[in-house]
Length: 540
Image 1: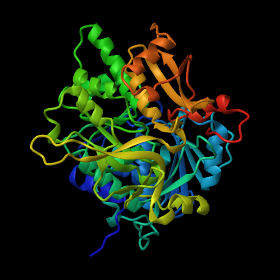
Image 2: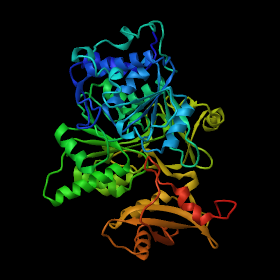
Image 3: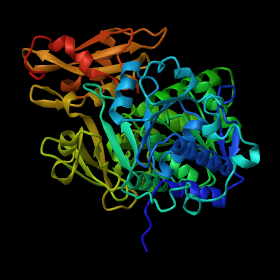
Image 4: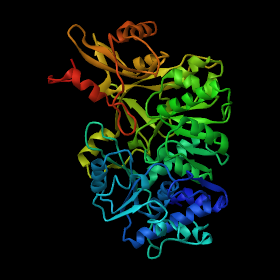
């Protein structure tokens, strides 16, 4: 017997096993908030959305875009759109109107769902149906107009297909979502993730993070970002209560962890920094920190500084788990969760090892190209870029996905009676960010990690700049913490005490801020541009 693997499976299980369990704790006090609802109601609202899209004439395979921070209606759309055979197009709500308009047009979306906070931002975009998610304009789509008992269902999708679609089957190789990359150097590309991609990513990620029906999850990671890394699917399948957080606020996160009994959350290193900042303020006031020995935090987006990892585990007592991947891989490729063999390590060494990308997730194969680029194979590698066959062929050349990241493998020494340690992937740089100085390769990430360990440093970006003697030399651009002081000479000396001298910055420039994309990534190409202006090549 063979049944297609589709994201409907997760909601189908939830409504059959946990119909009366809390599914969602939506952000209170905002337009369109769903409040606290059960899995029976989440399934009912997803069904209402699917029926509403059908009434609007959106066919199977039709695209439905959404521009919204985290919300209960966004969570509903993961299932009301994709589980019933339409294609969800999550869009970063921090983008400018022109960028959003490009994605809507390029994806061919017929419907644009818009959070009230983005209503004016998207007002002039040409799209067949533009609907504001405020509980009024979208009332019929989400079942707000129905009495409570009619906003619930315990019927799985396979036993109650939409009228007129009884014979239509969602296949696992159908496109589930089109997720657009941030596009730091060019127009964003639409990553086609299939139901099979999303299903397997959710299951494998849930397995590696020990997701269970005892967990309570806090949505700090944007749902638009690679479908919240696929967490909404696995959480729903296990019947986990899901608490919505619309914006990153360290103190509010700590409050939610405390009030809602949160055991699991995900985010980029910037989220960790916000939490640690709020925790430090609490400690200054003599207040307790919540979640010790209970919370697991999954981090990705960039290798976080090892000192940040150490603080999360020692000061808060939360477990740190790092994953590595890309939107094109749904996103999971590697997992770094401390194994039992590390039990005797001191906190600094444990944090150093946790700063690596980690080991391949189940079903993932990795290898390095001759130039050090990380290549991957997995069942959750994407189907290709939407309407860009040449870019798809390039990314998947030779049957491997080309990540564009440079890396190497690092082997732990024998420990705890083991004959040999495990092999972990280390992401040393984006290939274009490797600095070659005097014939030596320098990882900007490693230098940045060192700078972040200085108590005065808030942000750091390390780039290669032209040098007559060495070809390229290492330059650091640094933002200091508010009220902190440090000279460029102090920071260079700090690095020289900790790194091989050829890796250390030869110059440090203090800045007020550093340019970032809407998803928080440093735009190093902008930082490098002024130093390489007028040259035919950006290497020396």
